[in-house]
Length: 233
Image (cartoon, rainbow, N blue to C red; front, side, top):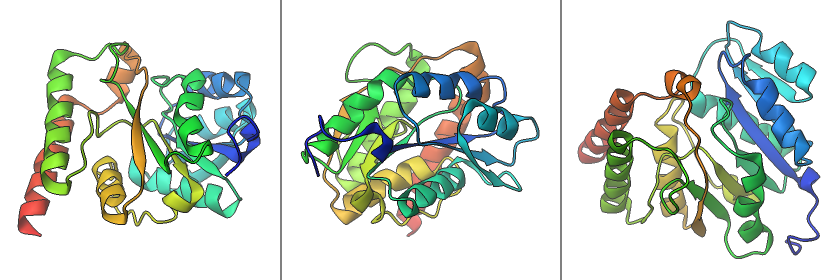
């Protein structure tokens, strides 16, 4: 791939899974456009509000699920579309305003220079994210389980801010429709031998994002299912 200074931002496609995000998705799209990202895909995962029309008016390409299938399924729909459309690099980005558009360059630069094929955002490599102690403990427990089961050492295994080279993302055989997709992606990176690195990113929690996002109880449930499925496999 070309040196990252020569790669056009139009070759970087941003995938946003959205469910009932009419209140935030316009600002998220605007922040991406402010940093010159033009290929923005919002996958409306069966929203009951005006997410699709708001996103389209804001300038994103909108794909729709007729029913709510889950974040994993929505991201897969968007990623598949981006690959088919010729994207060189695919970035997954949250719809609730937790991620920072200016940090996309941090995630994509090591891919553009050929250093790695995937970059995974970590909220724990630097102390910039306002993560509660309780959530941090659950997330780091998940990282320990991933290392124990798959031998892949990460500080943050359930961060939705990621970037992939197109050849790498095409190797992923993802089947999890809902939040388990985050663990599945890491498992597939290990299984397929995809070269990766973690990049420090800022996750900004607000009352809105905490209300909309995955609860600590749900995160614990994913962790438990991961252990159970691995043991019973």
